[in-house]
Amino acid sequence: EDQVTQSPEALRLQEGESSSLNCSYTVSGLRGLFWYRQDPGKGPEFLFTLYSAGEEKEKERLKATLTKKESFLHITAPKPEDSATYLCAVRGSQGNLIFGKGTKLSVKP
Amino acid sequence: DTGVSQDPRHKITKRGQNVTFRCDPISEHNRLYWYRQTLGQGPEFLTYFQNEAQLEKSRLLSDRFSAERPKGSFSTLEIQRTEQGDSAMYLCASSLLVIQANEKLFFGSGTQLSVL
Image 1 (cartoon, helix red, strand yellow):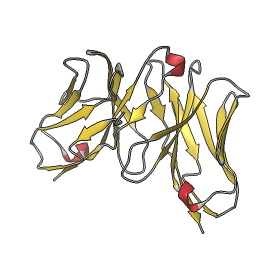
Image 2 (cartoon, chains in turn blue, cyan; image 1 turned 180 degrees about the vertical axis):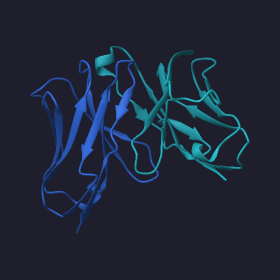
Image 3 (tube, chains in turn purple, brown; image 1 turned 90 degrees about the vertical axis):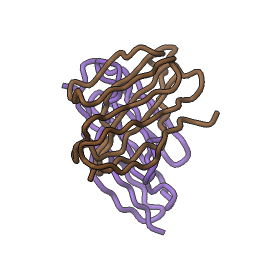
């Protein structure tokens, strides 16, 4: 069964304190791993898509990497505006996205 | 491009009542998805359309739930005989599918349903 597990559930950082979020996945034939950001009361906002092991993508202070079993979202020198829930998803066998529970990131000034 | 629009933003209903939500996707997007999200959980897939055809429906979806996309544009999600367990955020997303590898889902802000 296709499955996505994210850790930690919550992460509290000081402004400027770099860290990483983990996404472990089980899927029969990876057809894309997706990272989304979700602010309270809003829908998820697309960040990255990764397709093959070794692939990396960057956007501002965020960098996503992919291995055969997991993905990492690295946050470098975070700012308070980076506070949000970060969701990881894989494309399931039926074509829909299967999401993890997310990591709630809080960045304190 | 005004993004994916969902209406209403909030809905409070009594158990046993029927409710209907509307989603207006980004124009020219051919795929439309419905997801449900409860507090502390990621979005859970419900169903999706390509144009007006409903291609997939979650096996976990109760037969009290029905969705339509009559002209391949907006979509409605109806829940009949609501139960307290139906309380959740209902999210709609749309995409322009050319090849699946490049498909990106754009989400609306959701409809928050509370069943009393």
